[in-house]
Structure formats: C-alpha cells, structure tokens
Length: 90
Image (cartoon, rainbow, N blue to C red; front, side):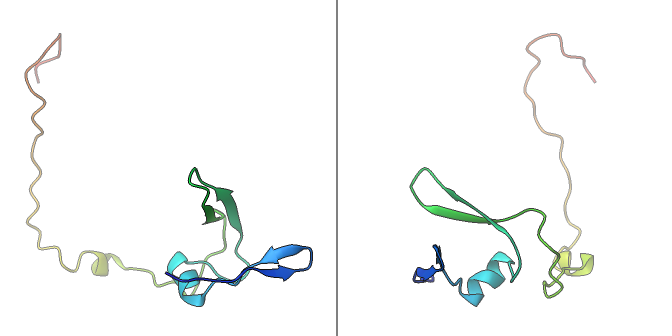
C-alpha cells in the first residue's frame, strides 16, 4: 500500500500518484480518471475507458498465454438433473 499527501494546486487539491501504482493500474501522464465515492466513503479512481494505448505495456502473446497448458482438458456434459417439465429429450 502506498500513501500520498494532498496539496493545494491553484484552487483545487492535487495528489501525486506513485509511479509503481500508475504502472500497476496501467495509467500514464495524460490519461483521464473518473472519480467517485463508494458506499464506504472511499475515493475510487477508475481509468476512463477510452484512454490512449500504452506502448510501454507488455502484451502477452498466445504462446506465452498457453506456455503451461499440457492439452489435458476434457470437457464434460453438465448434469442438469431430471426433467421437471416438458423439456425436449436430446
């Protein structure tokens, strides 16, 4: 957890977000954040959905995504239980 001190910035209040938090949240200089207060009275800052693409962001390839997959997955038909109405018997 990181902390920051609120500071006067013109007629507003500003806060400096630590670099590590920005990296983990994938936000950068120039991004827009939407602020709200949740039901616990906490400030929530969410990156605006149309933010710019980050070229510094590590993109995962399909090979990296499946590097530990051994191909052993076997799908199974779920057990829906006995019919209770006028279901069609497949």
